[in-house]
Length: 253
Image (cartoon, rainbow, N blue to C red):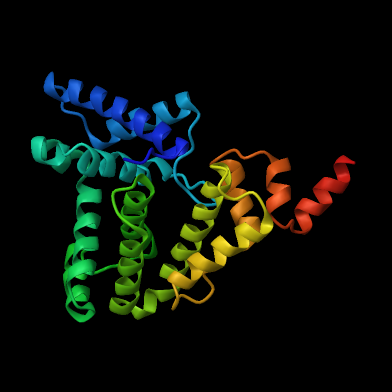
């Protein structure tokens, strides 16, 4: 069985430990709320100095969104949803709903999927909900519980079911490609510009049909630097520098 990449294993270890704490409290009769667990999650990330899975921005609700990681590891990595259904219904009701939507997108024709999805989201599919739906499958791919093809299928099905939201789906695909390249740089799998470009363009080809989804190097740099903390000197060897980076470099010399 292949070893997990170091960044994945580090997050898994932290989330396994956090799950142990949550289950201990739950079994002792402490009825945790979603807000309680979000706060526990935030404390652990800050203590371990681990960034939530994210793009270039840091939204105020990032830890609420990062509950997807705890949910995915608990359900697909530990099988806890069957042992603790009440806990999942109480704490992960948002992730449960969006996970059901991904299953609908994987198994139902677009015209039928649209009606089912609208029923689950109260008739209002916002841009934020679209990002959260895709985040569930992205998180599964990141932790190794699903393959990239399934993310592509979900993205394509979502864009077909809701053509008016295709640009939002393309934006998320752009994030995924940038995150993938950034993580490969961190893992030492991408060490030069040629390999970086091959990975970026090759991944974009697997998501054909999403125009504007190829990320620029500045976006990749932001994720690599802030999420994976890759040193600037490493990034400068692999990524082209935008105007801001060039001016910053000249100011230091």
